[in-house]
Every structure is written in C-alpha cells, then in structure tokens.
Image (cartoon, rainbow, N blue to C red):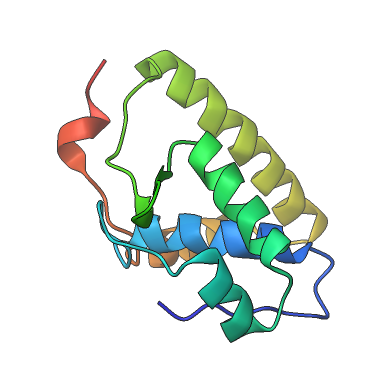
Length: 134
C-alpha cells in the first residue's frame, strides 16, 4: 500500500495515516493478518517523525483495526463484532448526519448525493454475512 501525506491538508499527519489505513481495510486493499511497515520504515519513507506514525498505529490499535505483535510488527486485525446491530446503526447514523449536513452546505441535491454514494460504495469490500448479525 502506498501512503501519501498532504502537507496542505488541515488534517494532522497522524490522522491522514489513520484515515488511509481505515479506508484500505474497508476497500480490501489491506487484509487481516497483513503486516504494515514498521514505524521506523514508514517514517523514513514518508520523511515524518516516527512518533507521528506510532500515534497513528496506536489509535488504530485502540480501535481494533491493528494488532501490535511485539518483536514481529504491526498487523491488520481480524474484524470484530463487539457492538450490537442497534449500536452499529446509531453510530452510522451519527456519521451520516454529519455527512448529509456537509452535503446540504455544499448545495448538492439529494439525487447527486445518492448517485455519489452509490458510485463510491462499489469501491468498498462489503461482507453481507456480517451485515445481519447481532
């Protein structure tokens, strides 16, 4: 996977990394048990402070997306279903409300938003077996 840092972004570098890893996992570009670059290696490749990479990895580990295996490295974690279906829906509705609010402020039509969501959703890896669980 190729990581990119946008120095013009308002988003802190560690959050850019977090976002890129989350998206890569969601798209299926990173698979469970796949090893990520070491903190030292990624910081050298991106010419950023190792603490920045460590902070991103720590946040992703806290979220359950990564596992740190001492002496072996950082790996993509197996998906977990810790939240009930209702809790997952509530969490998604919060994100959707923020997303739709932004779309309204950008003066997009409902049809355009739906078209964009449909188009982009095809780029992600969906697991229908887990969609109905809990």
